[in-house]
Structures are given as structure tokens and as C-alpha cells.
Amino acid sequence: MIRSNLKPEEKAEILLWNWFKTQSEEIEEIYFNRKNLLKWKIFTITGVREKPDFLIVMKTSLYGKKIYAIEIKSAEKSKDILKAVKIIDLYAINYLRGKTKYFIDEQEVTINGFLIATEQSPRGFLFKNEIY
Image (cartoon, rainbow, N blue to C red; front, top):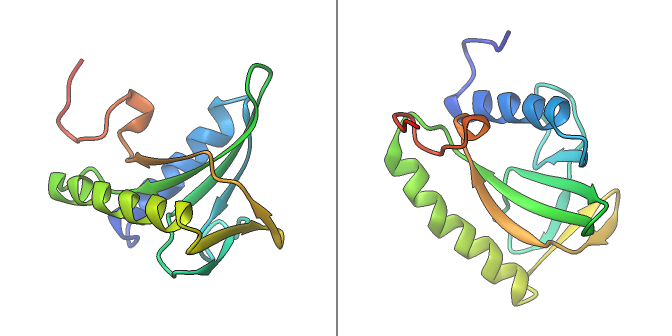
């Protein structure tokens, strides 16, 4: 049960953490960008201070180890999801230009992609009122 006093984005993070951890055999680990309610692992950065909410480490037989940065938004307000595109652009540009470096357990890591997710992502959607 998720606490009711959490911000919508925090609820989305916990829901997605649980979904990733329980529904995918390929996800090796998930890292938050800050101390969190779950007291789970965190990643750090150097350089430009903007950073996504999660790093997920995946290990697949076909592609090997990949690390993705994920910006998580609540699906409650469509405008927040649309704004996430600008944030992803900023993170990706700063990373590609070498202005931000990402670290897991004090080891610099390579980011393979930048993604957006909401609590609707387990259903295959970003927005609240999408239907099949």
C-alpha cells in the first residue's frame, strides 16, 4: 500500500520501482536520484545538477548490459508529461556534451538512452485517459 501523503510523482516512482523489480527478469537493478521512502540504492552525478529520477540497469542475452535514465511523471496532468520532453532533452544534451557524468557505486557509467515513464507505463501508456 502506497502512503496517501506522497506527492503524485513519488507514488508513480514507487509503483514503477515495484513493477520493474517484479515483472522483468532483465532488469538487474534500479537506482533513485535521491534518498527515498524505500531506502533503496541511489545514483549520483557530477557537473550540471539536473538529473532524471531513475537509472535502470538491464542485462539481456541479446544486447548485453544497458543503462537507461528515466524521468518519471505523474499521469494526473498531461502538461507535466509534455514538459518532461524538454527535461529529457536537457539531460541527454548535457550528458552527450560531457557536462553531466553519471555514477553508480562511485563508478562512472555509460547511459544508453533517456526515457519518460508514468504510473500508466505498466499498461503501455503515458497519459491517464488513454485506452486500448
